[in-house]
Amino acid sequence: MKRSYIAVGVLLAAIFIGGVVFALNSNSANEGADDFYNPVLPDGADPWMVKHDDYYVYTHTTGGNVTIWKTDSPTSLTEAESKVIWTPQSGTPNSQNIWAPEIHFLDGKWYVYYAANGPGTGHRMYVLESETEDPFSDYIDRGQITDPTDKWGIDGTVIEQGKDLYYVWSGWEGDENVSQYTYIASMSDPATINSDRVELSRPEYEWETRGGSPSINEGPQILMHDDKIHIVYSGSGSWSDFYNLGILTAQKDADLLDPASWTKKETPVFESGNGVFGPGHASFTKSPDDTEDWIVYHAAKAEGSGWTRNVRMQPFTFDDEGFPDFGEPVALDEPLPLPSGDPAVIYRIHAADMETEAAREEDDLIRLTSGESVQFDFTAPKDGSYTLYFYGKNNREVMLNGSTDGTDFRLYLAENDGSTETLSVNTYSLDLKKGSNTIEISVQNGETVLSHVEFR
Image (cartoon, rainbow, N blue to C red; front, side, top):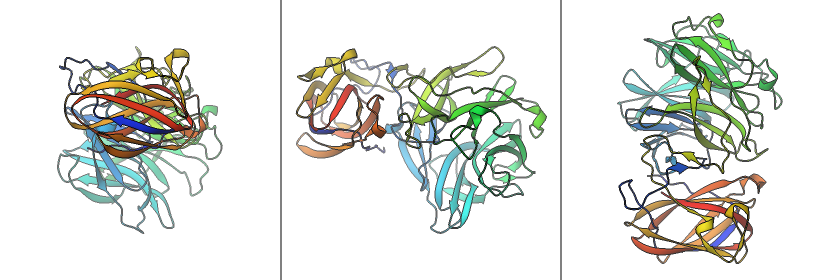
């Protein structure tokens, strides 16, 4: 299992832990929470999640390689097993700025589509092919995937229409970075385009052109429902708070290479709201029991924070005409019911249930300043490695020192991009011993407003 160690906001200097009170399955006498808070990953952009059989495969932009995660719980990505499946050779055309990988199961194998550039080259799209049906198997580099124009391109994805495959991506019309269009082409196999590209969409509405040049249509994702094929794409600058989602729709039996088959909605289908800024580059998956639809997307960590983003998910429905209704982005301080069938067990301790001499604020939050502390008790059912989730509001990056069962450790809290209003989460991997324990967290310097902690 890979754990995340992430920087978070104020210096919490003494954490004394001898164990934690957890239950590791839903049959335990101790019941876990039946809801969760976003984000599901404290850091990440361009999330791709696909449900395959009884597990999920996930990936996102790392920049320097292609890493995939595998889990049975879509809300437990921090605890998910991960593997770097491909690292580029230095100096090659696809050795730098590896963006937006996706992994698709086609014809009995996994195919990874990603974009990258190299010395003296612009972004192009590439394909990896697994050797077996296991997403953690070795991969063969199938090289570049392109149409005859070989123009700058990113964010490739695949439509399956019966036995036919189509490739959809975001690219330049020419050789200048002035605008990104959505293109489609047919495929002869999962690694080969065999037709000219066809333009499906270009930025034309005001909500697609905000944030400055270039104007953007990017991150196309496929969402099928009833008799419709939807392409949900991102509009406006990804670096801006205006990033949002638009939609193109065709009938499932239509000629997908005919632009007339596609209808573009004139308004965005998902945009900033409820203190969430720049939601976009979404993917779509089902709950573990296949009864619910979920959108997985990234958003800015705080207003104006640009390309510092995290990964979130929330349920959505379809209207009577077969169009998705994503609603509004859910605020970070609003819990969501776990996806139906999600095996995650989450133990949550609210600030209201902690002992402290510090000031309590509205909604039972605790404002911790230098020298102040909180205490709470747990009983760990067994020895093991657990993830601590710390939810707070802070705007400074500082170091945490602590100890667990006599072992010293050092942690960091991220600055949350200067925001003191937005709830942020940071995760830590802790080796804990079985038994009853008291945890004390004290602030050496700085300040944080504590909402709650979780253990998984």
